[in-house]
Image (cartoon, rainbow, N blue to C red; front, side):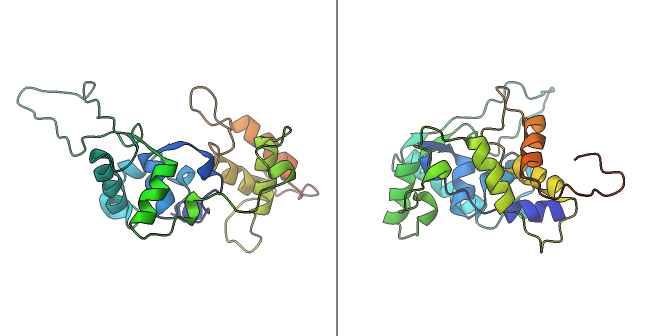
Length: 215
């Protein structure tokens, strides 16, 4: 449970507005103020009572707007062909759509929310252009370099989270793996790359707890 709480405390990345489209799970989490990388792979399988507040309401509102062509995007139906079937058994279909495959355009989502009277700061790029290594338009822009710096910046020395600085930064990078391109072609997290990045960001190299072989 502590790990769950730590994941939900990760702020929404300011780089999501760079995406032209996001899937419906990501869009919903962004709108309710939760960084998608911390929860998107499991939120739909969670018991409805355990999902974040407003998740279902916002997701269903997006679906409705897509169905009415108010929002620009695509709705992909679920494929139940691989579900097990037995004689006399009716396959339950609580959801018609696959929310991870269905997508919505960010500009359309922003305009729609503004028309409804909601703040859309999370869907806007910062007014002040980023410079240097933080600028995505820089010829030498590197997501891995940005990942190292943000892992270092997001370390909270007052947190009750257990583990060495390196271990905690590894956890943060894993939760934000997709943001920084730390996913291979199969969609798997690149754990060895993340360990290396955390080693680069780690300042606490003078000592290590007994039994810790991660440094």
